[in-house]
Image (cartoon, rainbow over all chains, first blue to last red; front, side, top):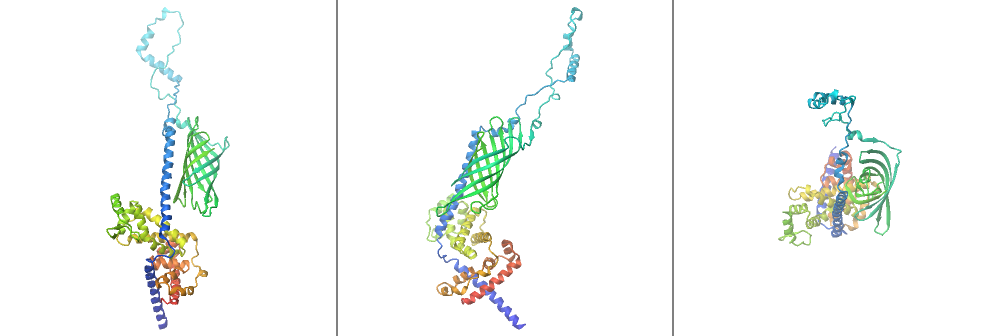
Length: 298
Length: 203
């Protein structure tokens, strides 16, 4: 027991000495310059990364400016969506038989109207009594008006086999330092429409190609596959409108894009087959973001 | 207010250590913090110059690889500059402690990414091979080298517990291991280190 006790005490002293020695050594060494470490070179790398953040802000600003200019170019009709849908609808006034009878009763009860009728002596005319025809009076008849309600008018149609059902598109993303093409396939799965607009829902898949150049000058292509969900709201006549799309990356490469990666886009449909707008890719569990401006054909 | 401060400091030259001089006095951490919060580039550089070596040492203690340590340090400083607005200066040493914590976290993140095994006994270095260089180095530097050459699991737990002062509970949470595993790793690290320190004549 005594031997064990001495051993334990010795071990405890040894333990604390090891800790103290290590701690002191680390404190002393912290002020000694690290061999082969050039802080100025590392600062260059760090400042370039800090600069990249600034560049991203500039790009983001550019994307926002582009979106704003698109709004202006589109005659700000995005702000008029509601008014378009709520434009005064031609009111169909239908007068029913009951209303007509009510009308006659109203005339009978109104002496001013009856006076005119009484002024024509029945004996003075051989003509058969004509059927009384009274045109509708401008009376408030809100309860009789059948106004097509906007909600009733809106129909939801699931058109899985409507034509066109499949859409193919090609896209170019202009990023801060590179340009990346993208090709994809979309499937329409639902469509809503109002008097002026139609809303289309699509689900699809796309492949974005990103290029990198290694220090040795070798170029490498990274194909990134996204699963996309798209919503487009277009003017029926002009096909102009807005499209939003969200995509989820199913094959992060670990280099350019890692962990959870999604992309979000807002496009202005400038023509039947042309869209333009900003897009942001959030990667590394949404910690990093890469904005770009995209041009879509399809 | 920051602009006035910055303009004043801009008039001062940088000394050879990279700190901004203010009437022959080194700019203190409180002033550096204020200027960095105002996104002052010179102050950012001064802060980096002041702590780069120390933080490189910290990252090296965990990662034992210069390239990786540099990456961790750069990521750490990026975080420092982006989150400095949330930092509250609480006297001498608080800024350094805060930056060090960030560097330790960045190093741990890199270790996690590497998915290293907790203990790599087969990679235990033969410490006796360093004997030739003992005389040419400071004893403290040799001790630090010995710590750096511990297996990854031992080294991480030893650094966190003994040098940084984390509790076993905190270590367990950060490394996603149990408290008992942390204790066991520390015990093994101490035993290995003690043996090595005796070998080099430090104990």
